Length: 565
Image (cartoon, rainbow, N blue to C red):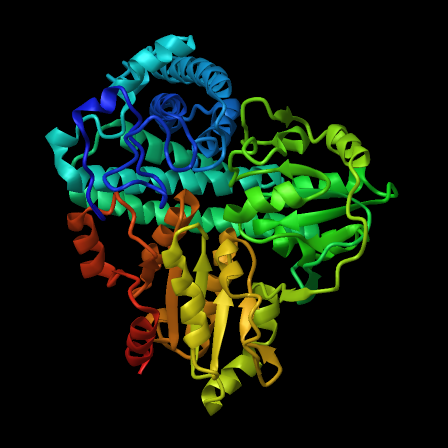
């Protein structure tokens, strides 16, 4: 049932997972979730999360005494990232990662205890997550998994506290994933790693105070804002600011490699390693915006984008006549459509039996691409305009303000986020199509594929649909909104601006918390509400932020326009 957490007595034998929009009613309490994750994988991920919180318990306390271990700190974002929806499905990988995490926890414990001794202090008692010994083998870890169940004390603390804990945990996962993207791109800050530890240590303590949990969620929103700013800095420093670009959406003749996920750095490495080899490199899904960065556009064999959002990948990957590299979420079972032998993973991604590549050595991908036929002819050219990130939009801010002042632009909509397979996601297409002709649509994330192929025209030469990039580029949209509110001397909530956010997984949760931290109200969230938003938690967010579920597009549109008036 929407907004409720229901746990059957069998939860010790089956997975219990409610972290994404694919969740079955009452949570995925089955042998395999809708994402394809098995109960074993889900339970191993629960064990990993509990060990990570134990690491943070010691690391947070040690840091307060001035003791820091960079290896422990840098381990955390990537480890959390592996537990996101549709990232890693390999049990053996998680058994190994849990072993690394336990070693990291031992190191963090020694760091804390040494810091205490050096200062003549006695180490404080620690919560269970810092003391727990789940074992080493797969069998031992699975037997221990019920101790790590995310809802093991639901009956004791109730659905409101459990829901807020889950909201905080999933926001932390999404924030950590963005932090890992930034780290891979060469940017990280010590204070960000410290704050990630702080949230993990807070969760490990078993918080039960609704006020404290809500405040921590807002502070996590602030942290995610800083992480997205850091990632924006990493990308724009390395690749330049995105530029308005007609991105080719149809293939060219020749051998080919498809790169999916989010990581621009991995794409750059592929481009470097295929120079002069006659291999065309295509982006897929969330990597479409890579075609608009000057540093990546400079590679002539970056041939454009192939395909659409992640949920279409099984059909699109099966039809792609080349090698495929998955750099981050969202991976779907590659075996059912017969392309596992030409699929490769890197970074946090994994599927048992699919070759995983480390250290950005993509020679195996190149070799496989040369073995495959590629496209035999050029398809008729089709393009989509993208590249309207904050630098571009801010460059025409004066013009935009004049257009708002004259009434040429009556409203601005932010429509975007994570896409998915549910039929209700047609809502975002319908909403975009219903928007008035004097309105602009800012979009980001793979949710844009619902409508970015539609011709919605322009206003005074400015396209009505402005593609601002990946989901993490919500930072760009936020900066534009803040700049407009400053120029118009009003709050963001007083702008002629409405937000319709499609959520799917934990990165979207982190972005939502950032928007709430900034005080943004009247967000329409859909197509269904997260299961962990219990009625009590939803009531809290509706009261504080007027957060509301999406309904019928035409009715919601009238409400949005009425609110602005």
